[in-house]
Amino acid sequence: MTGSRQHYNVTFALLAAAGAAYALLQSLVAPALPDLQHALHTSVNSVSWVLTAYLLSASIATPLIGRLGDMHGKQRLLVVVLVLLCVGTVVSAVAASLAVMIVGRVVQGAAGGLFPLAFGIIRDEFPRERVAGGIGLMSALLGVGGGAGIVLAGPIVDHLDYHYLFWLPLILLVPATVAIYLFVPESPLRVQGGANWAGAGLMSIGLAAMLVAVSEAPVWGWGSARTLVLLVGGAIALVAWVWSEVRAREPLVDMRMMRIRGVWTTNTVAALLGFGMYSSFILIPDYVETPSRIGYGFGASVTGAGLFLVPATVAMLVFGAQTGRLERRFGSKPPLLAGALAASGAYAILAVARSEPWPIYLAAALLGAGIGLAFAAMVNLIIENVGPAETGIATGMNTVTRTVGGAFGGAAVASILASSVAANGYPSHNGFTAAFAACAVAPAVGVLLGLLIPGRQPRDAFALHEIGDLVEDPSR
Image (cartoon, rainbow, N blue to C red; front, side, top):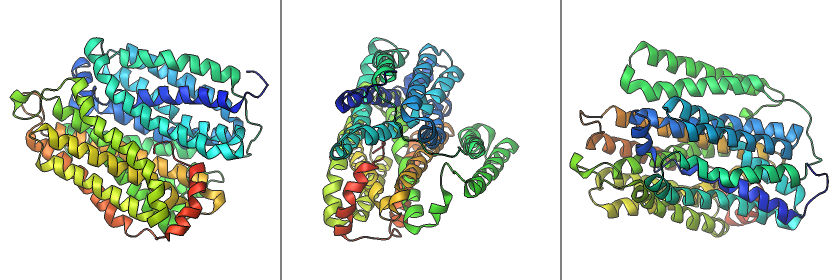
């Protein structure tokens, strides 16, 4: 690595290339899940682990990598993370079985700390007046790259095969990794202390046990010994994790902040919205790709399934970009409530009206608008309820709860579909109705909990908006 400090525009270009590759890898698999199910000879609930394993790994790795970056150097950890992402991508690319694919996705998910590390490098290297804009552009890359992945997945699978969902992003990822090692300077800033490895282990065990139980319950039975042991064991591990974090000198997730009303309510809403957002990646492609001879579905190709999700991506970007203006006028709480209500309404439409394509396009646009509004508003809501020195930890906690909600959402809806699979190998129409209804309930509960969030006046939201930009979450 060169010791000279590059112009900050060079640093940003390299960070942006790595971020775009990561965003593509995150979303490329979503429309292709039904094809992956058949190619890997597995079931609908098992193939959902291609997404769930990634989210679970990211939930655990993001706070841990952020802490290690502060201790040992952000550039150094970023290179390590990118190497892991390359390795996980190669493993996924050569996978011919579900087990190998999941191993690759777990390693890829460990790169979840890429964006927080990139934000830290931007704060360290950019001129003060350029920091907010740089972080905003990096955040936008996740949405743009995610949308591009959804659109590109179809042509890749239709004209090549699923292996190229992973080979092609490597064309961007490998040179970006080498260039970041050579040209991005290391931050001179360090923090003392250690990482709560015991807490990370307990969190891993608890979440994994409960997700496996939820995913396999249709096969094992909800009252079976295996299901109950995993649910109870997972719950005990998570309680022990909370206890470990409370007692730790350097916690990965500061549980003491959860005592703050504005923090625990916002994070709970984040988990419920994550449940709904990531579930759409499984439900909508699976539904529209089902052959119409089954009695529902449209027999769409992977390309067609991606097009059904495009309105969600576009609306997410458009409405997310408008949230700042809405916050300055109305405060942060109304956009969050409006977003959760829109997401619930989108799934309600899908639960009762999906016999034609247009309600699905409408629901996807409404879901994207709701997620865009709500996710963008959460950052300021968190900041409004903690001190300036706590914003980094508090917003990181919000990312973790959102991702955990998404992991449970993916496992839960896959479990609902799996429990309704008929002799023809496809979930029943009623199974989809139940899954969409469950996704409608989650953000609806979020609306009710959101009412408990302490409100602030619009002028307060405006004063905090610039601070919010500096700690903007990568999943916005």
